[in-house]
Amino acid sequence: MAPGGRLSLVLTPYPIKVATPDGGSLYLAIDQSFDIGPHPDFAGEHKLFTRSYWYGVYESDDVEHSTPIIAWHLESTNDDWPDPHAHAPLGDPLGRGPRLHIPTGSRMTVEKMLKFLLDEKLVEPAHGDWQEHLGDGQARFDAFQTQERN
Image (cartoon, rainbow, N blue to C red; front, side, top):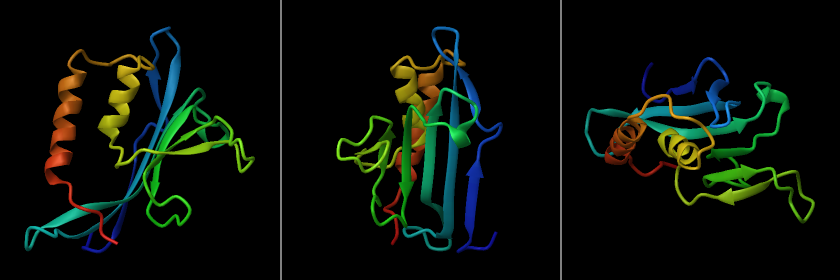
């Protein structure tokens, strides 16, 4: 793909079925959209710029017709909520909709989302060394992260 193009990533199978500690299941929906362009710090190099993401955790595999139990979202073109935030189906006390938008303060990576689910014991780890793998992935992201471009 030529620089300046838009890329999308959807993990399959969609959604991803994960085990819970009580023997049940939850379903993870992970979507990301990127632009590719010149790296701001390294001449001649390119990088991906995250434009949007959606990480949803559902009780049903029918994610199109279900409310997530929690979701993290960024849409850089959304004027109402342009910053990273989580959705929680708590209901808005002012009657503006079925969920609240909770600021997360920074970009939520897939690694941070998975670590949250594992730390809170919402899902079971597939491997005993999950902390090392998620830590390595997060460290790589942190090392190469640049400011979002406008």
